[in-house]
Image (cartoon, rainbow, N blue to C red):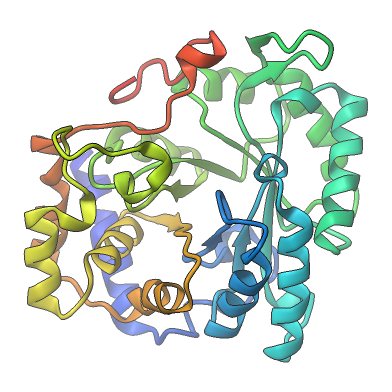
Amino acid sequence: MKTFILWALSTAAAAVAAFGTHDLQYPLTSSVSEIPRIGFGTWLLDKANVSEAVSAAIQTGYRHIDCATIYRNQKEVGKGIADGLKKANLKRSDIWVTSKLWNDHHEPKLAVEALQQTLVDLGTEYLDLWLMHWPVSTSPKTGKNKVGYLEAWHAMEELHKTSQLRNIGVSNFSPSELKDLIDHSSTVPAVHQFEIHPYLPQTDFLEYHHELGIKVTAYSPFANTNPIYKPQPDDPPPLLTGNTDMLSIAAKRGCTTAQVALVWAWSRGCVAIPKASHVEHIKENFRALECQLTEEDLERVDRVSDSYLKRFNNPSEGWGVKLYDGLQDS
């Protein structure tokens, strides 16, 4: 593990120091090795302003848009992409677009339908990345959930052979589920997207992905600052953006706590997908590409989870299935 941590620190810290903001976003070839390290997340963005927010993100410099069928705003995201590309004088091939297959469309025929609808909604002829959102299959007839993913993955593998998908991957898998999927398919996921932030570092799991050559995207990089997690004043941990260690590092380096969280994620070899609905926050998050942290700073962020270890997104109880087996705070 120590070798992995040192590799991640040295590689990412050097990259952040050596490249300018836009160099870190270009070029794009739909190779997963070139997925832009900062993406614009669209989960929970209201339909009323998501088009404006996505357009603003592209005009700011974001070249990676993360969306999903279940977010129920992909038509609006598509409008924002079209507007942002036009105003930034860019082509579709200049940005990376990720979407996700929802649980109730795991059957092969339904997976095909889901992809076609996603392409129509987003106004694009292809996706750079399509993820299986959860290792959970929901019956379209009964609504019952079960752990299931191989049927959907095999359908995704077939669709990957077409010009409509450049890469396929997964999200929210446990170590055993990921191994089982790889053992029973011909395609290793290009990307695995799951919850990572200083309150849930998942270092061992990250190392496992590095060994497999699977890129990791960190969602909820700001942890419990997301209002969906309903943080309570007396319920630890404190808001990540108000954590004393994060505040101290941010003040020392002239960055915001959100920017510190993003640089920390990149230092570990992750792509991060923060979301924001206001232009000032969209720009603030993007300027994290200019935030410089030392190895000592990064190690200090690593230790935040020593005091607080918390997973915020776990629908296991509501869905009646076991998720995250073998992972931190499962």
